[in-house]
Amino acid sequence: MKVSVSILKEYNRLINAVRKVNESKADFLHVDVMDGVFVDDVKFPLEVAKDVISYSKKKIDMHLMVNDLDTVIKYASLKPDYLTFHVEIIKDNKILHKIKNLGIKVGLAINPETKINKLLPYIDDIDLVLFMSVNPGKGGQEFKGEVLDKIKEFKKTTNKDLIINIDGGINDKTIDAVKEAGCTLVVSGSYVTNSDNYDSKISSLR
Image (cartoon, rainbow, N blue to C red; front, side, top):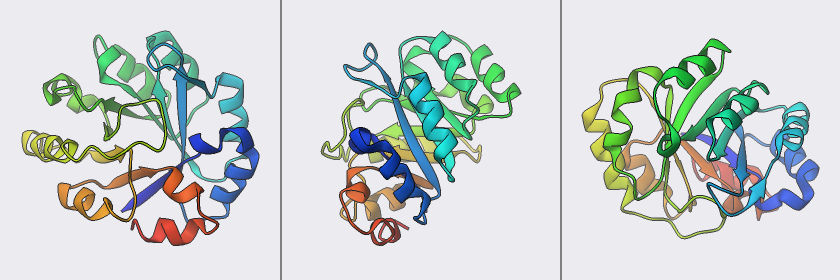
């Protein structure tokens, strides 16, 4: 299991949080971009995200909770390793091709209440699916176990070897069910960053 550490809950002390992730055994640094429209909060405006990327020694796993495809293209200019945005805003696969032509791996995120049929037209053009196991926009929420059934259903519908990522409420109590559902990457925020020992928490998710 690969682990991506979200620093959303550490937003008021970002440099310290990035340094701790740099020093940890995390596979990715997860950057949660919010535009104040798709979700209520505003986090990681372009210049802040750019600074975080420049300071990070880890691969960047960027999740855009934004309502506008032009914003997606702006963040693609930062060249994160993975750029994931929401299937709820996509209109066709042109933007997926644009991102991939920049040498960036592209993912689509799906909210807990959205049906997996929304993903199916884009399967051949993406590298990753991010299943939200909480409502997007705030850290520290309770895990929605029903999302695991959605993941299992999705895996039955496609033979493509996609990264199956999950974000929200990931900790030592939920990880076994997440593994059993077939996830290959997890995003964990406060479970890791509330600890004085990032590596101990990361290891418990492997």
